[in-house]
Length: 275
Picture 1 (cartoon, rainbow, N blue to C red):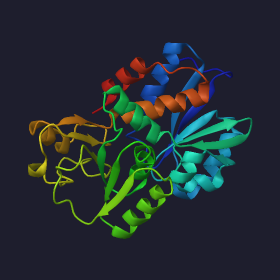
Picture 2 (cartoon, rainbow, N blue to C red):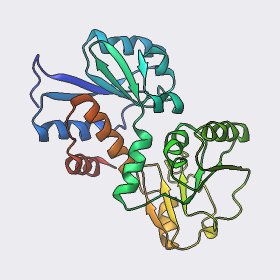
Picture 3 (cartoon, helix red, strand yellow):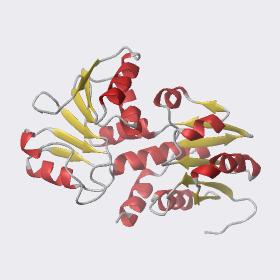
């Protein structure tokens, strides 16, 4: 990659940031399209977030992705927020438009594109989301516009109730909160939106014995977790979070460059760099 005074800079703010796969995905895409951009990981301590956001303008950075733990706090430092990002309460993509910083959230749309790519249709389906945090909010924003019902299970009932109340404002499908997952037969699609599975020795989010065959089971973690492996053995169709990572990045790519992202190139870059 040749860096010159004309090279447009993009990147990602996070803490920690060493694990990110985004530089490989985006830099490979820039090279494939032969456009003069580069993508850099920035280790941004929470205490320095305001300074880092101001630096986007000062250094004429075209845009950045935002990851843990900055997705919520970054909002207060931006000039404008998209409707979906406001509802979700989190930003994962910032665009510097002539000195005005605009925040977007491409996570939910990325998840929906991943479902579409794998021929999974949530229209008129009954969906269970395990988790009530930011990831659940991002994907639920779109799920509840299409599904028949959306059931939420979270460790903290108050947090799950708040999420459900927010979804009900969309005035779409039936929203249900449960205190325990006792049976799974009534759901068409089950989605793990918790961090459980990042570590190999993490407990499973549900009892695998309760899974019926031919159910669709998704995990937002981008590796093949024990949860998905065991669900596969039960005869379920499974989907990990790699597609969501790909498509949220592709949507950010288009926001920064106004060009169609090379999806196959980006996907291959992710697969080559995933551990």
